Length: 119
Image (cartoon, rainbow, N blue to C red; front, side, top):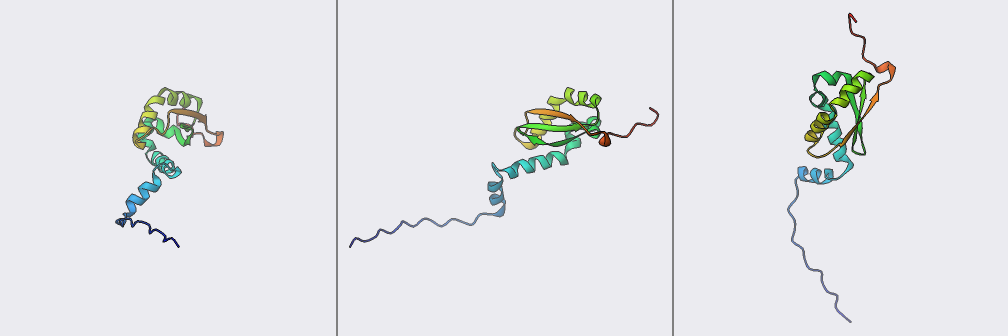
């Protein structure tokens, strides 16, 4: 009868810290996208700037396209004008290319900003 060969012993690994485990899980997963988008929502005033921020809000990122809901056609034009600045800020915050384009959509009538006084 032939003897079975023993498997070679592998060196024991040191335990990993929780931070490195989470980083490994986060890398390349949908979780990373969620974290990046959450950071975008949180820092929207910085991304859009004080003039644009109250008139639009990010809805999400789909197929590398940032979707922004805007208050009116006039504000849609302003957001389109600053498209590349917004994308640069978004990608800088994410530390990678999160979005390469922007899709602008009008907010439903009930979500439009209130009329300005004296206008």
